Length: 376
Image (tube, rainbow, N blue to C red; front, side, top):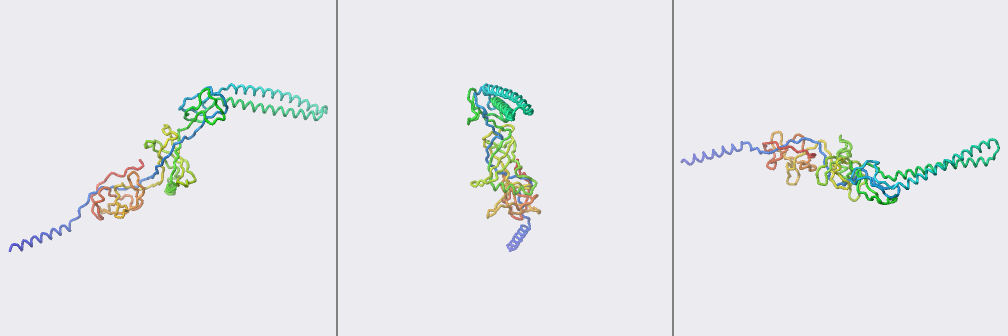
């Protein structure tokens, strides 16, 4: 008889537990979240480039002769107009003396021609001499003046040859190896330069960028306050993959696309005060491809995928629950995705524990470290 009340008691207890479980709130999931804020972002193409000097001057003789002296130290800095080589000036000094004597003779002949002309002019006026004699005197005077002009030009040329016997630097820069020493014959018609000077306080970095990237950059810059895309800074990485201390500026782009590669040639000018970048060196240039004035970035680990592989983010709603939302992602920048669509500034995104979150599930949130600056 006691069994029936006992069974009734157990049944009532089971119904109460079921009702209690049904009315209990679901347990909140602990997650790490971050609040996204807009920031200016530049997306770069990392491209190989080669360094070349700002200016290069091949030192060649303008006159031929035996080199007497080399007046510089190889590998040193030389200023513009500094003497570099001295060619034996003796033949040119003799040529100057001969040209000076020829000019003196021409001047003497000019004086004599002037005297004869003045006498013929006076006699012609008095009808004492013939017109033919006067014409001859006039022609002789003109010939004497022409001889003086020719002798003067010849003397100037010989003085120029004498000055060119001292070979000077046309630019300021670093001079390299000397290809001729004292006693060598310098020829004005030779094919090999005596030395090469390169100005490298600024250098060029020549690269090639996809025409699609160039067009993308122009589209993102158009209508913004960023100005000319060719004025955007270009970051440089050295041959050891370390950031270079100075940024460059795009100097110009080719106006024709390479039909084989679909790329454009770009020349970047880079300050090089410490002479760390040397001509011929290979570097890597970070050339702007896209520019965003108010980009939203989320860490790579915050992105999850649905069964079709579409990217999603778990967003913390106003009532503290989680919402799985499909988004459109842009490029991956330093382990952070740029979100193009589906996310608004100021929203909280679940970064840790999002795989345990279901839609409308309560969340117990704690802040995580914000997105680092991808431009650093």
